[in-house]
Image (cartoon, rainbow, N blue to C red; front, side, top):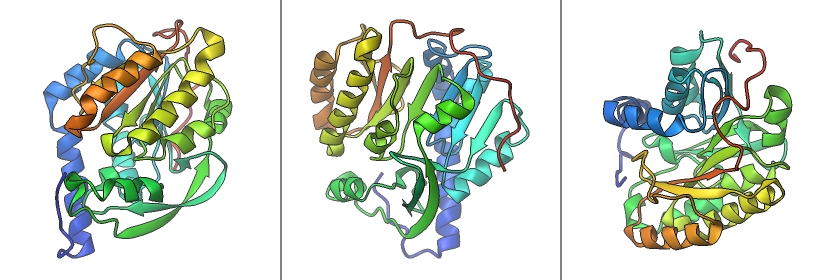
Length: 276
């Protein structure tokens, strides 16, 4: 992730950043096939998926291939342009040009134009990762005011998702704070430099699921779309697993599922047009 394009004009940094994301997330057929195999456990035809932090739509593409209706939530203007270009005419994709947080309102998004994958609404997260050598050269060189709604708001409007992906660069705890009920299955990003924040997110998820049979967990490192454990774990065993990966310094995704999670159980409501 080490990069520094601060000497380039902003327009060129933006073009570089979006091109880099497109190549990274849409230009690797092997990853795309692995993603379909993984998400087939959670989503099938007619199911509803929430993609919180949709970026340039790699998950949207995968989930649509599985036949799911997708609510793609993304506040970054450049990423929104890509989402509208790729999916704006698909009636089974609803594009929400907002952020998700603990409360409705407005917030400031710190944008890294050259590396939009690390744009974040969490100043604490940015402060925690800048000390890591892998983030040397990363610049958050633009601020954008964005509208914020909660996960509860999304559920009220669109229905209960069969699966919800949360990838918001350190803002996961705030997103989960706006949720008052367990989701059947979800994922959230894990980044070793922000280990404590991930443990807080895990505790919030575990508490939400306690009255619904309890979540079981797994971990997929660095976009491999493969689970690190051959069996699903409880929260304590997941923390032990993360402790093994933490010294490697690479990010990944924690997956959580309730006992009744799976395709066909949480269909989308009647599809509507994509948001403008």
